[in-house]
Length: 114
Length: 115
Image (cartoon, rainbow over all chains, first blue to last red; front, side):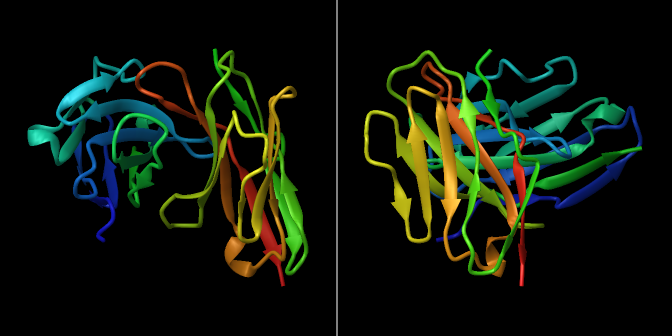
């Protein structure tokens, strides 16, 4: 079974530029999560989708971050414009559904904002 | 705010020895799950073990076991017969209340295994 795929793996941009990350969850997984993991900290949930609907985006900085999950499968997370403090690893995870299901994580995208 | 505290930023253990990683949490829920995730260097985060709060028996997965003290809100991970491949960041996590069951993670413990 293929795991959660993410691209790119690494991205370096200047502040105020835009960037987008892509995630392809495990086939059949209805729930998709985007986490931000700053160096030295645990992951923090940014947004959670159930199929193509948003379940929780309370910690998403909506003035600069946006995310979508078209057709309830792939998802993209965008930052526009980026700030220095956005430097982090962005993790995508998926699970069978909402509830106490195991979350399967992708390898992450390491973003450096200069 | 619901929090997860891992008080040991770093731990080290000799190969084949046993090590215990600590975690405390704060929740007002009576029924919930607790998780330990492992994040090896430059590799994906994977689930190590899961504990259901309503079960009194501590969860065990091969060399990994937990010591769950519900009243104390403590959830420690014991790794027996440590192997070099156990070297990683370990995160304690639990889902917050509500329909999203959003996972809240601790800051992690970096485990080093010495040969």
